[in-house]
Length: 283
Image 1 (cartoon, one colour):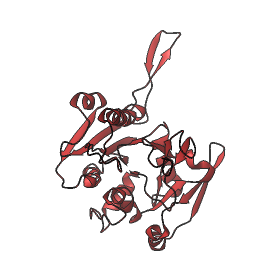
Image 2 (tube, rainbow, N blue to C red):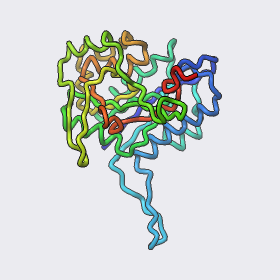
Image 3 (cartoon, rainbow, N blue to C red):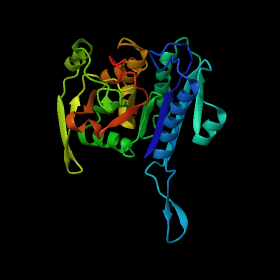
Image 4 (tube, one colour):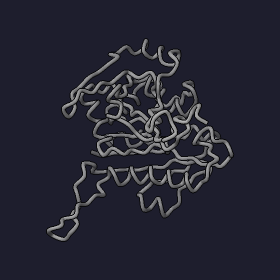
């Protein structure tokens, strides 16, 4: 499996804590969070693993399913928390672009995907505050499309850890108001629920009424199909804001979008490295 991951990253201490892209928190805590995200992507999925052979008193490398892995950080205006040594250690390709609005960075990830459309099998877009902790995370993306078809996309459920929240673990992407998603249900009719038996359990998937996860993963076939559509590259920002449009609207125009549902929400999940949503109304 050949994988390309593109992560737009921005930090500028403005005193505004309403969104991670304009963040007034201590830059060192933010830097640590950003590093944990890039480190997880590089070393959890790209074959940097070994097992201690106690009898042989040696470490043995473990083969990886990922034969080629490209990790790209997209920044603008010099507003970031990356440094050259860290980028070298993690094998990060740092791409600096010129933009008037940093929230548009994600669209450049799609431009990069198009340039390498025939080189990789899976193209991953992720916001910079999402930490994958499941070693099977990418396999689940591929399994879903292989099981339910290339016209459907599986998104992860974002969650936050917060002992002061409504629960220690809170999934933060509940249903949006119907006006935002109903038009897409009408334009692209599909099954509301899908089910499959996975590792001895029944897992349900719902056609989500909140298609934003700050993330998407597309197979080569899906990417090339999207590139053939009239709306490819239109940079439409009409869904909530440029951030949500980059991650979600691009999918809604081309695919039907699902998330694992109910008691199986954790089947496909990713940690949001923040507590602002799980702390709403709990000041």
